[in-house]
Image (cartoon, rainbow, N blue to C red; front, top):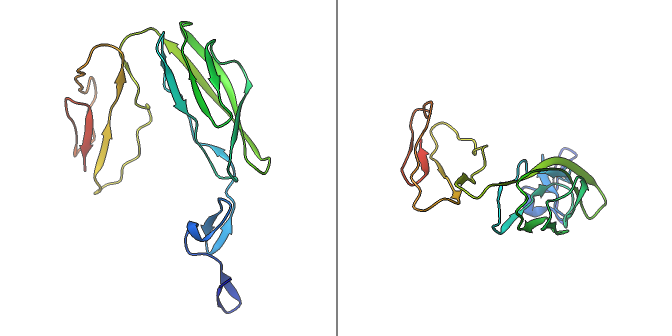
Length: 176
């Protein structure tokens, strides 16, 4: 193996791909990042329609195993050990859950989530937390919806968009 050393300090890596087992290259060292659940909210499920979403985790050492630690998924729904929630139900309402992820080394992390089944109608399915933008960089988000009748027409219902951003009628928020 090769190391670059200077005055007794050695650099093991330059980028994450130089590391193995899911480690990240930080300050020239391969370090395993703490396990964390990246999914902060679940998109709503529409009453009587198929639902599918995948939970996301980071850090630790993959593969990850997912489970419901507390609470219950709505009847007709299941969570696979690989983190996919799927199903269909007519039971309208929220289902608060504590989700657990375990990495291949036995590290665990938990997070509260809620899967809500809403009446069949028109719903915005884009996460309420939009990606963060940076000044002087292009920004682009495509809003998504489910239910109702297509085509959908989008607009700003209240307040103002930040300077330089605009919303098109097809739900594309963009600008600089």
